[in-house]
Structures are given as C-alpha cells and as structure tokens.
Image (cartoon, rainbow, N blue to C red; front, top):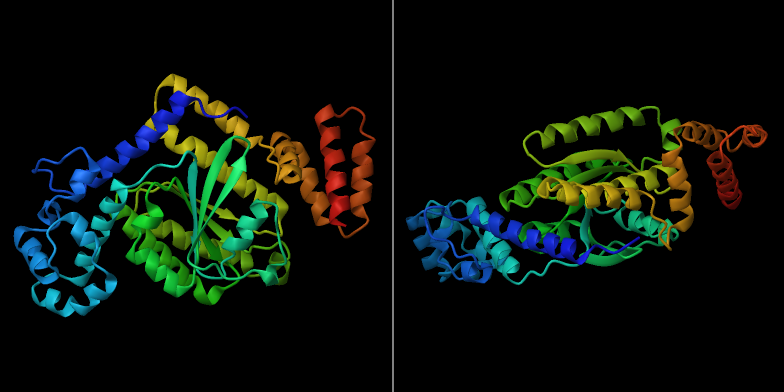
Length: 391
C-alpha cells in the first residue's frame, strides 16, 4: 500500500490543528478577541471562559491564587477537594469548577500537542472487559488469557499496517485509573480519531457501571468539543455462550437498546458491534470495520473536494484488503470472506458443523463443483488450511 501523499498528510495535520483551535474557541467568550495561537490562548485570563462570569473568575483567582488559563490547569484534584466547601459557599458548584479545570488542562495540553503521523485509537472500558486480549488478538499475538495482567494506567502500542501507523492507547479499566482519566481527560482524548468502548457481556453485574462510565466519557468529550467516532464492542460474546445461555441474545438486545438511548443525547457518530477473540470471523470483521471508519469517516466529512474523496475511497478499498505481516492468515481469509457473499453462507455452515462429519462432506461437495469461479476455489483452499491448523 502506498504511503499517504505528502500533500494529504499536511492537509490532515493542518486540519487537526485547526479543529483543535476551533474547539478551544468554543470554550471561550465569543465577545472577546481570541488569539489564533493556542499558546497565547493558554496565557489568557480565566475570565475568558464563556461559562465563568466576572465574579466567579475573581472568586476562583482569590481562592486558588491563579489568574491565567495555564495556571488554572495546574490545579490538582487534591486542591480542588480541599477547597470545595469554600468554593461552594461562594456559589460555584464543584462540578462546574471541575469542568473549568478540565477545559484549562485541555487548552494547556493542546498548546504543546503535536499530531502523530498516524491514526489514534483509544480502547476503553471497565477492568476485565477484554481490552488487552482484544489488542493482542488484533496483533495476532494471543497469549494464554489467564496470563494477562491488568493494564496499569495507559499503555500505548503502535500497529503497522504496511506504511500506515495506528497508535492504539489502551486505558486500564480499574477504578483508580478511571478516576485519573476523568480528572485529566485532555491527556487521553485530545486528537483521538476513534474511541472503542468495550463492554464485558459476560459480566452482567456491571452492565450499569459500564454504561455509567460510557456516559461520563461522552459528557467530557462533548464539553471539550472533540468529535471522535465511537465503536461500542459488546465483547466476550463467545460462540459457545449463545448455546449455553439461552438469554444471552436478549442481553445483547437489552444493552444495545440502552446504548442507543444514551447516544440520543449526543451528536457523535457511533456503531455497535458484537465481538469475541474466540470468533475469528467476528473479530476480523469488527477490526476491518474499525479501519474503515478510521480512515474514511473524518476525511470524507471534513474534506469535500472530489480529489480527496476519490483518494479516500481508494484508501478504504486498500485498507479493507490489507495483508499485514502480523495478521496475514486472518486478513487473507477475511478478504475473500468480504468479497464473496455466497461463500460466507458456506463458511457459517462449515464452522457450525466443524465437530461433526458434515464439514468434510461440505468441503468435498465444493471441491467437485468444477463450474465454480477461481476465487471460490482459492477461498476453499485457504479455508481448509485454516481449519486444519485449528484442529
């Protein structure tokens, strides 16, 4: 796959910077003159925030000894808690002050932000939702699941797809880390192209906690005027669980309806996908969907010139046919899977009856069909090799 043309790379990098500036301006008082330079904005007085009136700005300055947006960004959560009672007595809610500090941190971080030459994906969800295992599966480096350790804070990995780079940020889901993300979201959401939120479908006791966490993230991202796309993965929907637990399909429908209701209050683009690291088909399908949304979505919305849209269309086609070094076998199989709708029906039957003698009979029938197109023969050959390895 050819690398992004230099003109397109400069264009997208410039767009990121411009969109960040526009997002910041939406946090500030439109009646005042706003500098175009983000560093200069960070040195403005805190009374430039549109949601702070003159008296509130003075109160915050007096209590915390800060004057500029950059200084407000340095306030710690401990300081906030220690002075929360005094702040509330002066008529400012702790929730409002938290948003102002978050906005200040966002601006301060943006002043030093340099967009990476790649796409940024953030994996987020409660602890034990399956984020690390999913990432390893995507990289075709699946370990013994029992040996996976909880992610400590934020972990960044770079996935190379030919000349393309994906920067994947995995956010640990333990409560102590979730508090950090919510307290300093600017570190994790700034410049995010796609946010993948995992829900452990086998942990029904924490459905509500997961949905609440999702809402908290949406509220903060909305306030910061960031616009990543969201993919909600109903994870650990393993193939056997649909047989072992008759109500599992109803759980899928229930959570899906809850998610749709939550997103009604926001303007974010989102989709809901079923996923499992034990289901190669769904996993590969979900990952290719992620890539399609990642590389096509934002550019098609922001750049409406015919030349760029044609480029994006070609790029999406190439991405859907990627054959990365680390996932070569899965990607090759998936290419044919997406190109041949008729073979997908055969594939489901083959996997469904894999443990019976029916699979050999089906393969034999397909092999004797000499009138089939060459792509079908190639597909069956690859499928047989894949199933032999699984056995």
